[in-house]
Length: 276
Image (cartoon, rainbow, N blue to C red):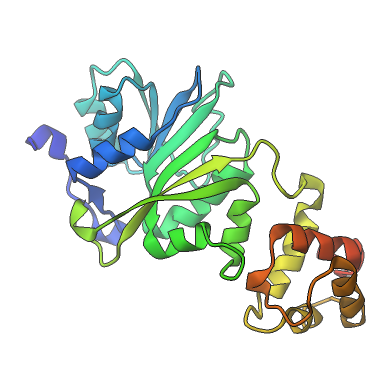
């Protein structure tokens, strides 16, 4: 790799680990599926290794980078790239309408910083416009939460699966990065649902219920719900019976549809003032 491509060194204080393995870069590029007539948004372009691979495949790219020194490097490295638009911003807060202002469909790709992966994914899924698909690298343990099935579901898994179907693509060893992190990574594909599993009007009440239950994730569901702040413990047994949920199950075993059934059975006022 020449000096122009190598660019600035990673900053340990920022948790930076640049992906440098050309085989992995090719595999990521091959996994990307851009919707017809759409653009590809790269989150965290870094030194531009993945950017270059994506450009070589003919993609039209909007690359987002938070760090000014890296953005300056990218502008120099890709000064002659006519299918690339570089933007500065924090993907946890960024208005992605600025990246695709004409309303075109878009996909997202990126090697996400470990510390920021969860809020970036949630922001993309919960905001507008929503991408067609995300192909992103995250810490392996986080990936397992994202694609977990009932029995091992966490609050994070539920929060993501409401909006997208999650697929594990492949694991990536530490040696593929510079510097090598202390953990393994996983590339996942999130195919965004046309209609979220939880209607927007019920979102606040749904998450009040689920967050409350997951405060005690290892307890049986009847105990978890009975211990919710501002809840009504006496309503829990009847609600579980009406929803067809065994009170001895644990929160991690419930499907999203079962949480909605419990919410229906409890009613909009059972969570207490301010919780819905």
